[in-house]
Length: 259
Image (spheres, rainbow, N blue to C red):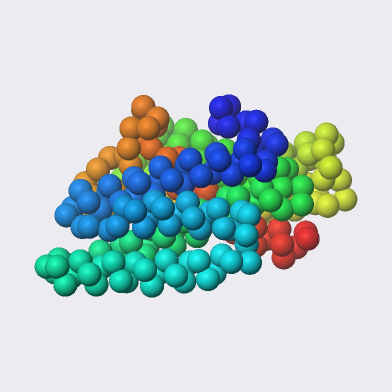
């Protein structure tokens, strides 16, 4: 977080490069997870397509949907050719390639969209900051006091106790961050602390399921972490799993109620 702080603060190309790094690595990790169980999604299309979708969304948004459509058709063509050459599970590989393009690429690009909103830097800290603190609260309490498993197959260490504390923590920090940005930033008259708390509450209820979704990928691949990019903390996909849900939902909420 500290390394990326200049990009978060200044936005623009710096933030684009930060998001491109995380999404590019996350896309590579996604393919690696499935190749561990003998699937063969296209590395070139998932990683290259993710970066292309992000780039178009960031700088040429009017072409975003045509580019995604072309990538889907291209993925079908690539895997049809693989089937013709003897790959019997090419249809499954196509589905996995498509999942990476849409989930990591298209959904991930909302991280850039969030920062690109009017007052986007402040919105980004409210949205992602609330979810980050919710994750921290859930881990702290859940690891110490959690007794009722939330999803034993997907993530055996997650508990309902931790989840509920995370929801409370996310709502509290949503309100606090909004109050701070009203006092020391440009958010006065745009959003109230109560509304910020409600944003934090909503996102803290929903975003943890992004973590469970990534756990599904890892459980299927029998791999603990998506990579060892951050020793002791996993890979890029492990770092942004909840944010992949929070960013688009945050953009939709902000556009609906405050823009």
